[in-house]
Image (cartoon, rainbow, N blue to C red):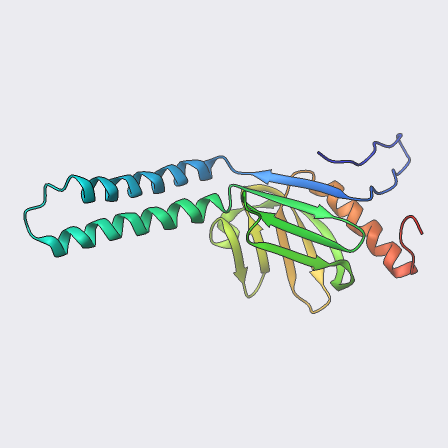
Length: 186
């Protein structure tokens, strides 16, 4: 859960020590289910093979089904959800249940943050961890709002996350504190 306080109208609430957010894509579970079905087919072929054309084609079919199933299963489960954490030093992005892949971006490398109202897998070439030369790097798990960081080396990093506006507010507050040479609580 997020640990940021609500502010009175017209007043800006102080940034929390740690801001957390996430985004989820339930559609990825259907793709994971398809991967599990491919694996099950491969196992079924291996155990109860009706093939009469020889061992070679059977082995290729079993290995192909199991390999395709594993790739689909683990490739989609890694991007069922993304968790974003912003603290005094960095923004950390963790994907899936194991938190991999993970990206940690020190705030000292960030020069700006903005909200992207509509991030779409179509813009990035699909779901997952993406790179496009003209757009930068992104972690896209669903359609919708996201955070876009402008990095000091000219690159951009985008991540889909719920309440992106609050995340950007916290990041900008941290950047102002860094620019002023102070940290919260000091």
